[in-house]
Length: 209
Image (cartoon, rainbow, N blue to C red; front, side, top):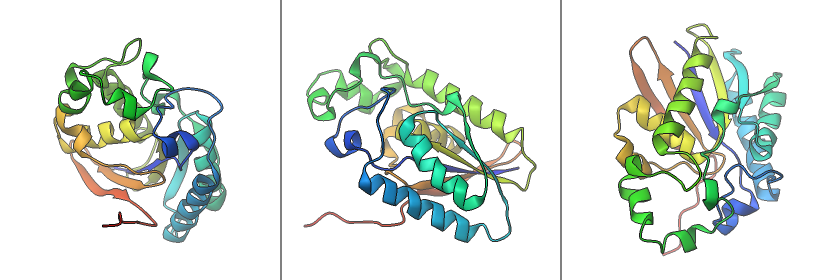
């Protein structure tokens, strides 16, 4: 069955400032994010020597489409928007700073018991996980078993998908890390799934001591 490459969008100013963008419109990659997207495109084009990457799908948000565009161009493919790859619906928490939200008592549930949490006016993590995994399953059904395809999406949906396919309980999915412009890879077979790569960054920078 296909290999799915899950690419998180590049940096934007909301990521840089630690603010929840959610599904807000008109949030674009910043200069660093555009450079990250180009680097991912070049890396995937180099790896695609045998032409096994057959499609590039993307969440329909601007920041994901802008990340997907150079990837598709480098692979000589088109970007196909898929609403099932959308960011989690953060509801009333959209546009709020994570630093401020982390001071709320309910934040502990988000981190330690996300299976019990629903964003005010938004989705539960269960709903988001079901949505993105259903989308991936639908895309897998469109491809031959030796195909590879790219899905450009968002941090939490990618982590939720990886958690599902490796059998990690939902309450532990926050232990996974998915950085901007990173690549995670899943092999999805008949009743078998394997994590081939997680949070592979093209330029890893370590914090200063």
